[in-house]
Image (spheres, rainbow, N blue to C red):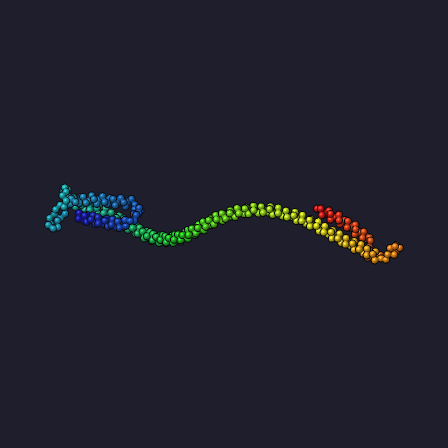
Length: 297
């Protein structure tokens, strides 16, 4: 019985070590690759261990301090078994426990292998996570740099927009001022055009009046010149006629009286032309008529 109790105690000690090993990696998700047989063996071992603890609690043990046998728990006494039956039972228990220990060792080996795989996967996951974190940090830094560049570009764009807005407002104010100035100039131009048209009409009237006056003056001057020329011509003809008469009278006066009595023809001077005298007389009459006519006008 002591041997059975020692085996059960050793198995109980082995079970917490596996639980402690599993709890050290509690953050890793357990694998589901265990068979139903191993799980059933684990449950059977737990149930049998509990039943044997209850059955062995009634067994007799020796008090090593006093050397007298005593019952540890106060339980009801049972009839003692024979030696052969006890050996058979112990052998069966030993075989059963050996099978359970082998199964537990296999389970522990499987647990260790799974834990190693989980540890490797965790290491790979941590390495991949570190790489991902490094990539994310790099992307974050790049994104921060891009955001800073975009903010700087946006600031420049905003300043340019404000400057363009001010320039456009200045252009609008200048446009309004130019429109007002153009409107004033148009009104002034209309007034100047009206004044020009009035001056043009007045000038045309004055030019027409001056042209008519000039034409009248010109005709009057032409008439006056014609009259003066006719007067001059008349005076010249009269002078020429008077000169001819004077020469004739002088010639007759200087002739001898007996020539007049005898009526002897005396040759006339060569320069005296009686035909010219008659023509001059006729021209004088014409000039007198013209002078009298234009003089009345």
